[in-house]
Length: 431
Image 1 (cartoon, one colour):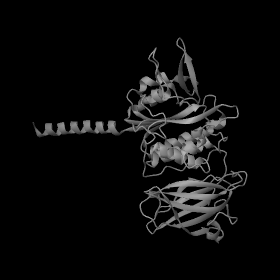
Image 2 (spheres, helix red, strand yellow):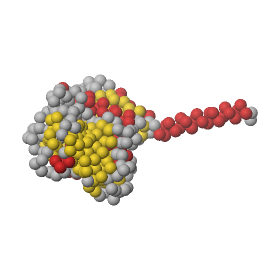
Image 3 (cartoon, rainbow, N blue to C red):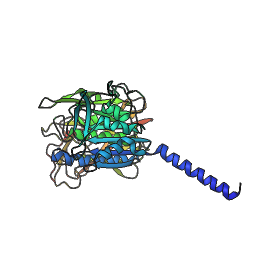
């Protein structure tokens, strides 16, 4: 064989290997959402939420497609189910869902809606998932988590969205508490599902829950299960895990409709990791001002997002914010944070801060308190004594005022941090 032939042969092998690597390691994220018969505010909120999920997916290096609105067509739902011909894919949908009963055998089939109002059944999706390229599906829609599904005996038709999207009947019925380890997971609502803007279970609970779930799941390297816990802590005061949340326990609307969130399959599935954080979850439309948390990473303060302490009753609330350890500079056994009231675009915002704390989470899972040793307010100077305890001494912050905080971190083998704030933002910010 001549040298030219050898070189040509080597190039061909290299090209084939390159294609194989792309096929093995490519991954896609599709974001679907129907505006059909949705309230105007729900559309505004979902536009913002799906943009955010898209950004989280991009940060985790997914080939990402935000099809919320007119691009949520039957064909794009099928493409999502096929995984966009990538090896590992995830998909999110928000919009109306229903149950269809088809003659002559009166079989039940579960359906989601295109943007034009065309309903796509589970059995329509099923043939498109035979390649099993979709690893994780989150359908924020009524009834889609009613059951795991399978095949009807008489007709052989596939049914049930978990089964039809993931092409398997071998899914744990409770993937949160009893993960099956098979690296496929599905989340959906059994019975009715709430709108993203609905505040009957907490202020914009759906928006905060879904957005924070994807922020943690897509970038932290933590599991679906851990991300559900994180989203719960960000959404409901005093609830430390998904098991404590209204979504897990079940809820009832004023019209007596009820529902709960189901997790099928492998709650230990990890869907993403990024060395670069996506932008923080923005405050939902038409909501108020609150403190923004910043974390010092040796090069400057990183915006870690708004901490929602809004409470129109004026009573203090407690929020816990999980913080990735790799973001926090601790080389001198100190960790520095900053609170800033409000954000650009507001004309007025005011919060009252009662206490702040920082916990280091070590490899054994235990929380260790990091002593607060400095608190410098941009207007009044040293306010350390006012922020050490939960009492009547508080710090009032106005728009764009800051408090710089320093904690001692005398521990090793830190896995993560938890920043805790007690306070209240009684009045909504004015734009």
